[in-house]
Length: 103
Image 1 (cartoon, rainbow, N blue to C red):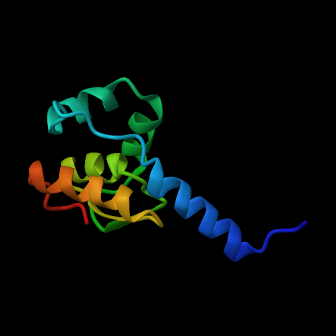
Image 2: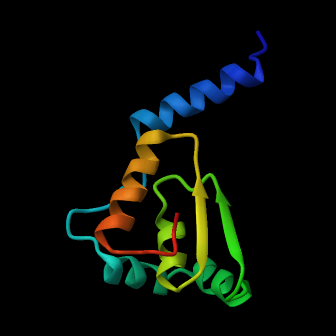
């Protein structure tokens, strides 16, 4: 049986509403997020390629760890995701860390 695009999208949304990851630990703050990123080659290479001006759109941002990290480096970033619960985690971290350039 072939699933419609809409039913697949709904199944994915339901999965991430239930299992939002990666999460933030209670001790996570801007410094721990930046320390984690320092050991990530992808983040290092990405940061080298991104312009310092203009806006970045991250589609499928999940819990917003990359969006918030890029916001910490003063990039203007907009994160979009299907999962409301994931976006709540991203927003809560952004607000608690005063990351004004991530949305």
